[in-house]
Image 1 (cartoon, rainbow, N blue to C red):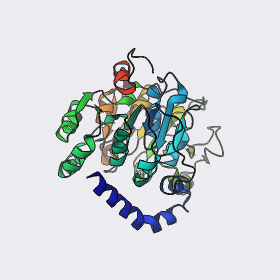
Image 2 (cartoon, one colour):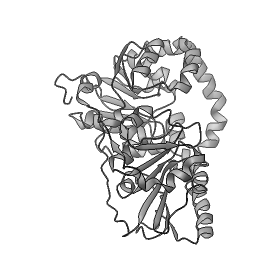
Image 3 (cartoon, rainbow, N blue to C red):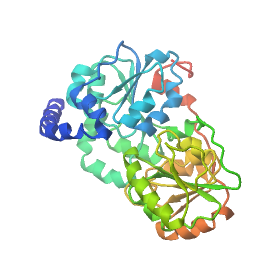
Image 4 (tube, rainbow, N blue to C red):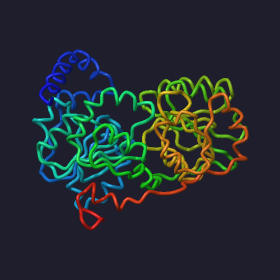
Length: 391
């Protein structure tokens, strides 16, 4: 099975070479494509017996922080990622070794022995687990979930997942439902641990001072089509300040054009955050990564994106709820059910009802985190320590 999969992965790599050579010219992929598919600047991790964390992108890397900080020796931390934003976030752990994860055909030659491999959520790369076990590592799937939408497709290919899970020692699921689904797909040692994002503290890295008498409204983590949809349905008050924070940096330019057109119609002042952080303008585009927590800290109302157009599944409501904002989300939150259950007073609505909800938002109670996860019982399963504190 492993040989057959490796053969298919090699064939796919050869067929995809023209596309990969084209994509590496695009700014979004100018670092990740050469590193992952051509091994440029991607040496193996140095040293053995480290704790290797693998995540995909910015948000997943940030979610790992409570666990990474529990590793007694920071120099034992290794982090692999897929995206450029994830790579930049991982580099904030100053003592960690950070790498892009090479494509699967390179892994048998690239992977060096470590103590434990901890993989986030849906990063079920078969060769990653297969090679890790062959090197003698303990393998852990962390924050595992299977959404209602995805379960049917998982079942259709259950034979593949049974093969993958044969190389996974421990699975930490987000909910009882997720645990049952994972067991049905062949996962062995499965524990319900909740969503690891409930373990985090959301501390600003920079303090902004908002203008007096302003109500700060944030459109957070918006996706393609959501900015226009939301702006067409909400009516801002004269004292409102609107800050738009797109989810993906490659969309900054497009959203900038949309907002320039919007402010010209509304006769509002406008600035991009990269050029003006004074918070004096009526409308702002946050075109910088890593600022959303800082902006939540001064927000009054947050409209959480990724949820008004079906297909994304919502985004993390714990972050804005931590700061007690009035929180509105769209109805499509199937990937964040566990987190929404941990939040009080998060109001969900469909796009048609958004205008009415926003108009009366001041009459709604402020959001809050209802309960927080306890990280201590997980440390032994993840890091292999006996004292429950660090490794």
